[in-house]
Image (cartoon, rainbow, N blue to C red; front, side, top):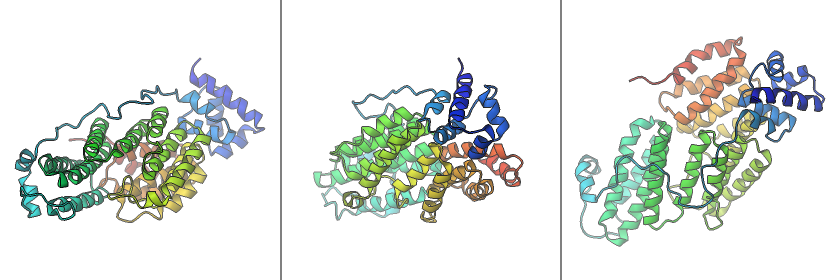
Length: 419
């Protein structure tokens, strides 16, 4: 029996058990009564968004959502190596080969390499690359990922090359900095829409960190991999990966970020109880003194002041509670720094989506209109997933003037790029 034919009768049964007429139900969900009637009769397929909203309103504990979203096959084992299958396109090479290919970068720094050992605290070259990493991370908030990727790849090779024949005092800090370059390169690759490269660079970051004496970044790599599976819609894979990064031996910040990602996986699956438990665990871990006093550069987002609160708003939408999501995201988005354009678009579109799902169409369009003007500067394959969801949500309100005015800008952002 098709999912369409199974979903409709089950939805009608739950609605009747709740004592709701079809009119009352359509008003509560902000959906057209005729559309819901066709869904109940099996004449129209339910979208995942509608299933989530029905699930939440009727307290079906994910039952309805699972009827329209077949469970993903969990391809991740509970234990085993954390390295992803893909590798970066270019291997890390020795110091002299890298420098010969990157002379311009070093000339710009105005620094000369010497064979003598220097302490990490006074190594001017390593310090310059550390400053450059911070600048590139900030630049990533306002620049297309495709523009940054070549430079990030080169700088990862250069810094790793510095460690290849350095004396022991300088080798570890160079490897650790190279690992952060590699991790950020992976994030930009994902933003550019290349998940294989993203996983490859994330694995490279873990290897560099281990070589530099940091056993923890490998676990954070699991959190990064869970982000790829989350955007791929794999709820089970996201939860599995995130749980593997919550060992009690790990630093509180990594465990908190992992609990946050686990919550997002549970939300995708419609599992509200486990989602809220994971969010509470994330909140406690990320608010701890140990998490706040962690090393630099900061692991994970450095622009969201309260990651657990922002993730709660994100999850509430996926749990079918758009009004609560909109209220929380309204508050948290106001706290984002003005220069963080990439972060503002990421959470801003989720905020717009929550308002649209709540029936606040004009507010949703106002938010989206501002963000669509920014998107050409910070294109994002991950943000586009919410832009597509927003376009589908707004398509239910074609009679709205605000929606009609927004459609051309939405279409331009979602149009495939041409060479």
